[in-house]
Length: 177
Image (cartoon, rainbow, N blue to C red; front, top):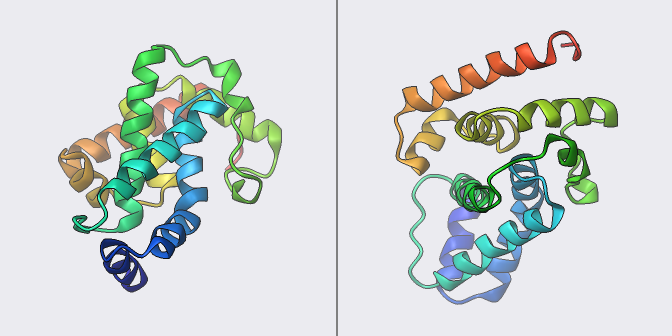
């Protein structure tokens, strides 16, 4: 958090290396968040880059409220949701084609498990999928998700809990704990 505050201060002062460091620091996490919400690898890349272009345009006037990672993850999730609305339908069969950058694949080591979980995740309601992805892959606390989305903590927790229950139903013993 202290490093993020210093990076934001340098970023606001116009230091291009600060923006580069922020991008390098969070790129993999944001790639995973977008990849879990979108089925098109090109769209994943576009969403992450679009978020950083908008973020870069705020240099000199960006105020950090909460965590930088949380802010960027919410921006990626919101942008991914907008892109998803344009496409209207997530094709679960295409979800397994989304690959995070090579060093970012911490979601599952086994490709079949990864495919199974992604397929089930693609069948959730968008709000449930977003709550799960931001909490699990984005490592955000419910309070941070609520603050960034403008929803209540209870709403975020409810969406997460309902999504997890739905995933358990969809996976029905296919994945071991």
